[in-house]
Length: 143
Image (cartoon, rainbow, N blue to C red; front, top):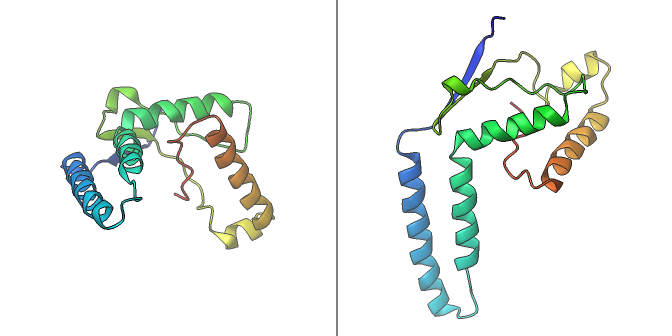
């Protein structure tokens, strides 16, 4: 079977820049806590760093995509692109290219007789449902 591929490529040096940003925020947080002693930003910074590290690992995103695929395998409305593991690394995500329309294409939704309001509620449900399963890195972007 032939596929058209879609690649998501991380900017070179992004992880290094993220670590520098974390160090800068940590330093600023310490200075702010001198002025506002009750201010405790350290826990938020730790969580931010953990989450950003996961976001920068495209193999994690690929794993979450496969989990989402298994949950929606009997659903003919939700399409989750196939992951090509042999072409995927921490910095490069390679998936099946899927044609379609952006979720904010109101003209298309109306022409297809799809209620934008109902569609919005479905998208909110899917996003909230996956988050309730602690799938913190499932992407439901409008792309």
